[in-house]
Image (cartoon, rainbow, N blue to C red; front, top):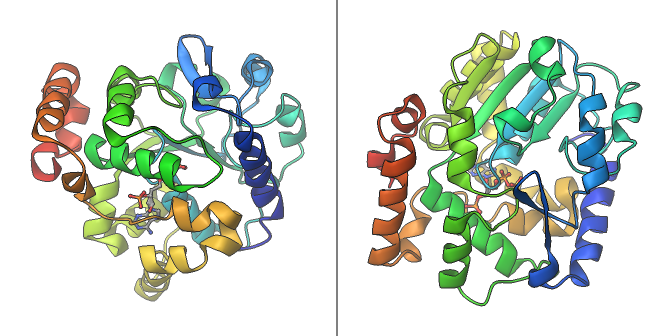
Length: 296
Ligand SMILES: Nc1ncnc2c1ncn2[C@@H]1O[C@H](COP(=O)(O)OS(=O)(=O)O)[C@@H](OP(=O)(O)O)[C@H]1O
């Protein structure tokens, strides 16, 4: 990747703040959703409405741990020589960032973990392109748990069972997976929106890259797609993770597998998640897109 020093600088600062933060003090609530004090502030949320989206912005929307950095990498490869002016998560950072962003060159890549209804209205008004990335909730939860408990400077949970309880209550960073999913459910088929499933990318990376490229208006040769596919495998991104993401890299790109949840979920937890899925998403367009029966 090109110069990512601002990107890594931001991650290092967040890790530094995390060192002094106990789990019990990690979250603050803004409009009913918990966010980590190490990455977000209410001042930034209040300033978010001043963010002016552009038609050629590329928005990557996902719940945490669904593969946002994977898509970020792919889009970065597509744009070629893209430089991150700063950490790309829209809602993270100081409240002056939206002013600074006015000076950033197009296309701007904006990652976000926000619910659909929490995004600034200009994204829809100006018809920015939105890639919405989903991953099955069981692997998402396991990835989230490992991230907390493996990165030395991030507050740990006392056990997987405790993390699972909090995840199911939505008492984790960026709130409930299911609330996030419900908020996006009816908005996945718009002209400017493309749904991407983590498990589909795992199944056939080249096809996924081709579809993402076409949605963004890049028409690639077979050879170009092949080259980007080789550079975007889990092994390839993990090998470069310290250069791209600093100390947190190897933990962020942890296993990259489908089905890792089977190593941690108890039968009771499995049933509880299946019930929750049924209650929130069964029979919905997103419920079908997630292919829950195959992966969970
Ligand atoms: N190339 C590739 N192939 C397969 N899987 C990949 C790839 N890149 C990232 N990942 C996996 O995505 C998980 C991290 O998700 P996010 O990037 O959304 O995390 S974050 O919320 O932004 O912190 C995390 O999943 P786990 O390994 O299961 O923890 C990453 O490994």
